[in-house]
Amino acid sequence: KQYGTLFEAIGGFEKVSQLVKNFYKKVEVHPDLTPIFPDDLTETARKQELFLTQFLGGPPLYTEEHGHPMLRRRHLPFEITPTRRAAWLSCMNEALEEADIAEPYRTAIFERLSMTAQHMENTPEHEK
Ligand code: HEM
Image (tube, rainbow, N blue to C red; front, top):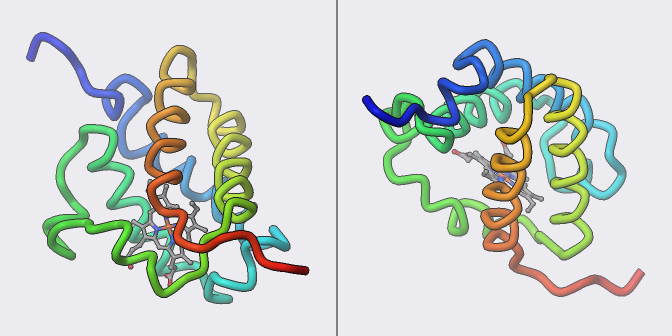
């Protein structure tokens, strides 16, 4: 192949796995996110690992197990407000940093995830 994938560029399964671990450690304690995530994030993290592998151009593991991602639809049961989107992205930004993913890949990945996250928003901000 003439052009590699982001998945290969950052170091494949090992890096994605590290990234996902870092990410859910933050999600688990983020006050804006805990209300909508399950207490046990083991299965959530496992699915995210399959998904991100595929999202970054690696093998289509998520689709093999679950069919078409339809991410917006799968997120409809959860109220995803602008605050929650920002919280998700902030956890991911720190996780990318801690996984030591080199530029320009880190920014490229964050930008793609930001666009997808935008698409997941499905609820206006709550009154507090
Ligand atoms: C599942 C929240 C953005 C990928 C979930 C779940 C929640 C959630 C609550 C269900 C967890 C569970 O029950 O196990 C959010 C919030 C987001 C967001 C608040 C902020 C915008 C994203 C983005 C992606 C993504 C940007 C993709 C890059 C996934 C995947 C699953 C998932 C693959 C598992 C779906 C399945 O059950 O098969 N998310 N999410 N999410 N999310 Fe997100």
